[in-house]
Picture 1 (cartoon, rainbow, N blue to C red):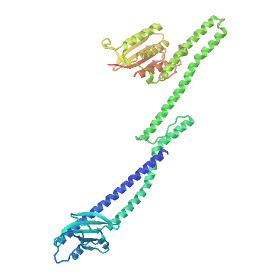
Picture 2 (picture 1 turned 45 degrees about the vertical axis):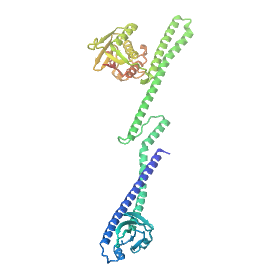
Picture 3 (picture 1 turned 120 degrees about the vertical axis):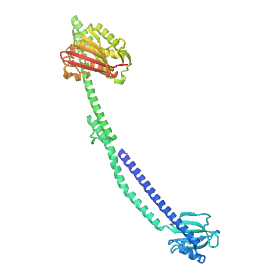
Picture 4 (picture 1 turned 135 degrees about the vertical axis):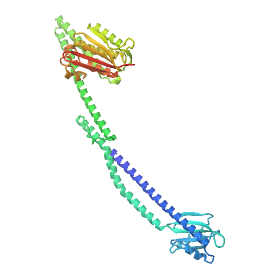
Length: 456
């Protein structure tokens, strides 16, 4: 069964059940109220009759006395202590009441009884009769009119209930359609996406704050995210294939050259082996970076510890300086750093990796002195790698963190770049609750900054 039909059926049954319960409650409450009112009225009349009998002259015949008080649609009689009726007087048309079973009650009694299908008020009141005996004055009065009114009320309530089920049925259908419309739209959109392979969004009504609108906006946001990720994945696969294809082509070409001329020409042998080795190393590094970038933030396996920023920078710069034989200067711009060293929470090895990536870029695209500045501002520590190289055009700055993106003038294959270094550095820094930012001017140089949170 479809969800819309389930909602329609459940809502209809629920509302009809509530409507029936409400109608039944109204009917029985009203009937109880009427019968209670009639009992109170009958009890008051019986008390007046008893008072009148006690005050009546002795010369009046008991039969005549009771006939003066008999209800217009009922009966009045005297029941002795022996359980027999001494006197019974009925109104016209109520003679059948004489045949009702007789009981003697020691105290007062009042109730609604049914006799021959008609409800009656029954009031039994003890009085002292003319002979001094304690007897029951019992008065019965027909409630036929009230019974007819209740029948009419019952018919009206049933009719109203049946008529009310029509708008309940229609409104339940409208409600089920309204609730399931966004879901149906999502199903249709997802089916269309499966058929056409295109990421589409559902059309939403005017902005509201209900859950259905939020579900629709969430679905559209998910579609946008999936589309962006799909496009990035396609671009990533395309770029990775291109980047891996080039070194493989070079290796294949030099291997073929070795097969043809390697044994006869030693210089060709040396050149081919060097090229194959260089491309193999570059491909291995590219593959390593691809594997790292394929991880999510929760899979970096970071070991976050409190690290002295000055020590890690000095150690990293010293190692890099010795390996590449480049002039690199470290400047610390934090006050009282001897008494209060700059402590950050980070993964020591991953922080070194980020710093090496920035230093490597600075070495590749600058032949002059490289400066590494360490500074703090409020609760943030900065590691700035500043070079005086060829710089990056302003139009390319927003794209330099995209995977495989290389600035034509600065990221050429001759420099050995793959376009993954800055992307990798950015993701590692973000995983450590930090960031990597770039400032550059073409022809003047570049400043790459690592931002980390200071531990106080």
